[in-house]
Image (tube, rainbow, N blue to C red; front, side):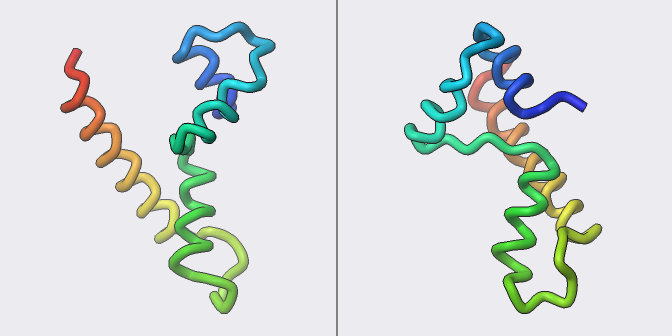
Length: 81
């Protein structure tokens, strides 16, 4: 599985040793996520500390996939091929 950092470097055609790219994007208000990190974020926001489970469950992962699909479609509409 490719790491977010590796995918970012590849997509932006950055040198492999550019560790500051994600930090610069974050400083500009851009979030970088994959299914795992988005599932964890959804779990923390919607399930909260009182949840009956400690980690993202199947529902959290499905919501992450749905949200990522919607974001990808929105980006594709903004930047058609």
